[in-house]
Each structure stands twice: as structure tokens, then as C-alpha cells.
Image (cartoon, rainbow, N blue to C red; front, top):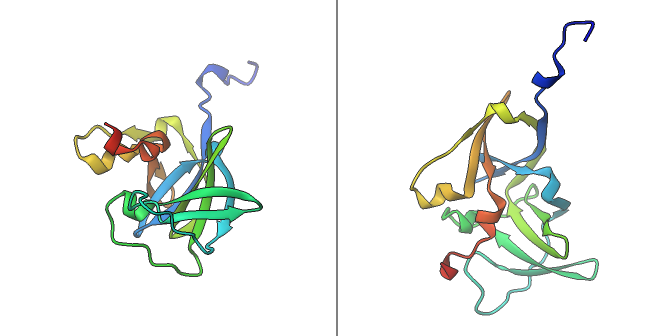
Length: 153
């Protein structure tokens, strides 16, 4: 190019929803997010895994809700005015809600600013990598690992 810029070196950044879970920052790929709703009444479902407190009715659609705190082995959810349910669509016909302590903002992280995590610790299988952001480190969630049922293994 005339200005000396090499287009092949341009690195695209991805957008993530920056959320707080148990006072830690996590990033969820914005492409999975369908909606963000305030905490609402959850109807319990018998014999569901302990990290599934139940389902919600969102505009006529029944959506299972997962407690990320319970899923990660943290202490139980404490609902505050900042608590939100992220509605994700990991597949076109399926929705799931994730309870998070707080939704902070949408952030951009370049692929080169994400370090992959390699560990045998079970909890870290939920983490695809750790991104460097101006406001600190953000653990990038591996959505498919979070959704995978360990009991099926």
C-alpha cells in the first residue's frame, strides 16, 4: 500500500461480554449471546443437575438456566440487583441461560492477546484462554466445555 501498511498483519479482535462471577472476570464470545435479562423467578426442575436451578419463561420460550457459580464449584449464587441471566444460543434451535453476578461491558480482545491455558485442573477445562485487557486479565469461557455434562463421560 502507498502508506506502507501491510494489510496481512492486521489482526482482528473479537468481542466478548465481560461478566463477573465470584469476583472474577470472564469473557463470553458475543456471537453466542442472544439476550441479557434481569434476574427473574426460576421454576425448579426435579432431578436436574445441581448447577441447573431450573427454567424460565422468556416471551413464551422455556429456557433452562445454569448457575455458573455452581458449575465452576464456587459458593452458591447471591442474587443482587446486578445479577443477570445471559441467554445464549450455542445452536440455532437451542437456548440456555447463564446466571452471572454482573454484566460489565463489551470488550475487544485481539487473538494475539489471548494466552491458551493448558492444565489438568478440572475447573480450568471451562477456560479457553486468558485475555489481556486494559482492565486486567479476562478468562475466556469455553462454552462447549461449560455445556458438556461431565456425567456423560
